[in-house]
Length: 178
Image: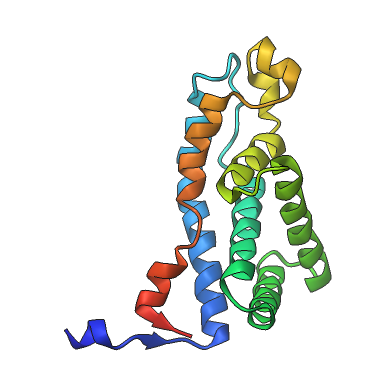
């Protein structure tokens, strides 16, 4: 009972570590299944042949989308501080400079917004970005291929998957205090 009343307090560094570790672990543990699901999806006339080692686009779409959520969850100063910490930690993980990692994440955020325009639905944006980054339009029937647009049934299934990778800040704040 006392455990439910007391919340675990995290500093910003711990929050950035937790945020990043959970996202990276979740994407790494699930991408084999996601790749298999994409490859076997009935929306494609030819198998896209997404390989488990092709995780990078998926991982960065997920991280970029979640950073976008950080910006809408925290005040601007705190969100920017947390984002800088996440970028610095990601740069270390991927052995690149902070500037390169920042540019890469901004590029993915911009890409999500561009393929999602005019919609503001982040889940739909993630799905369309994944679809585009893996060039899945090439594997669809001629109608959707000629439109260079995803089959709506496939996007619906991808939306269900994408939603699982968005950080649930309400659940997090019910257990932790920043």
